Image 1 (cartoon, helix red, strand yellow):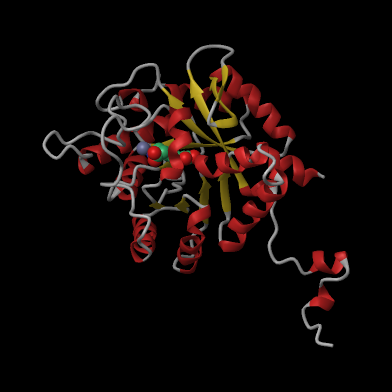
Image 2 (image 1 turned 30 degrees about the vertical axis):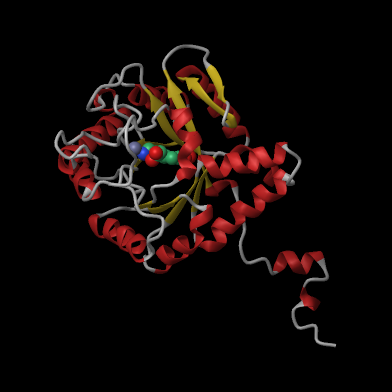
Length: 323
Ligand code: PBG
Ligand code: ZN
């Protein structure tokens, strides 16, 4: 009988000894959505278990996260007022700056990351300042604003910034802005390979960030492109990114592996809102075993090459990992 593979799968302890990839709570960054007010915690219909929260609720939430062993969050802001440039994002009294200060004051050991973009803050919902003639985002004016936004977050006490707008040259501009302001030790995790994906649908409900016209195809990547996906991340490494990212994750595991093989930088994946919602809805419908499919999915990200997983599943996964 030929049992070259199967003889090593019979004893469960040997199976564990031979497991090549492992998940841990240290792999996760948990996304949180901040808005103004007090005592607000509103669930979003398309993403059960995900909430818009006022700052006091976010501070409380961090207690829960610590109990679960989760030590890293990424913050998104829902401002009171939006305008053509996204001023709230560049203001030290803006929603994100306030949230960062509150979280760091109450939980100094929590590793706080901020998403750096403008789509939640502009009245048109695009990721930067619009060019009046081309009706697309003006790359270079947006770069200046990204550098401003980065310095505002840095002064508020953030531990890492994560620019997600897919502007050309964004890492060079942000690094220079941070260094000039004295924040030479603040790391940048770039959304370096980010596709124009329909999987972001539910996020745009939570973050109230849908574009009011058109789409993001003039700055986010075409899902069909593999060479360009590698080139985008390699470029951000050259510009000084400290950590790279592929987003979305699940339908792009080939790209995760490609980027991993083309850079020695640590790699993050963003397990996006649509991916989360699909599992949630299928689990609720009784179509899949939600916990098992979730853990299998998260493990697959690591096997594909991810060092960090940004995921709405982080709390549920952390609970399962405790068992
Ligand atoms: C902002 C941003 C988006 C996401 C993260 N940062 C939305 C977008 O690009 O439209 C998506 C996250 C998710 O779907 O969970 N640029
Ligand atoms: Zn954006």
